[in-house]
Length: 293
Image (cartoon, rainbow, N blue to C red):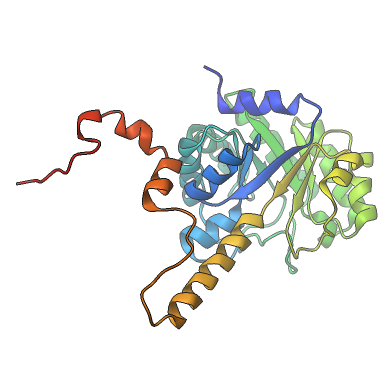
């Protein structure tokens, strides 16, 4: 049976831009799968928000992040690329982090060079570790993987802290020690965005946040720039929060019987989540009313 990591690796060998929408729980992951995207991204921002109710300030532990990766990977067939933050420590911690994410069923991770606790890559106030320390951690991640198809994405936040030249240098150094792709976080303008794939000597990932530090460009233009993958980190999270607020405000204003234009009945929602497969396990009671005595 083909593994999730092998499926992602094969997708990377094709020529089309890989668009990986950000999912934060099993329900949002199902939406990515049903829409037919070739990969999904388990966003750290979304994980921290949905599971902990906390901002993306490095407050989620490795155990909590891996737990979410496991739940999402078990819920869908589409390969899951997971946020692994900074690896949660030095080279020793990085080794365990890779082992745990592999066991979770994720197809790959990205690892960044911020100090821990980190901050969302599109916020101010970030700090990064020295380049050599970062490269040692990436090398440890590459060495730690047991499945050679498991994808390692090296992310650098140096652009906003030390400068663009250092970010490019770190991306190339990470590729030199075995990272599969490089992610230069938060290019400041279209010119920087276009320059990354030109100067990084390996496949590049662009992380897109609505309202983030980078300009929003058409995905066709991003592909023309030479990017191999795009992570749509907060698109579904922002839409979900807006929908939550809109529905709650509607309920708050309603004084009559609740009648809403919900798209899914409970039965339709359960079907989306695979109820037919579960019903097939007990077909004799599918339409029966059961009373426990």
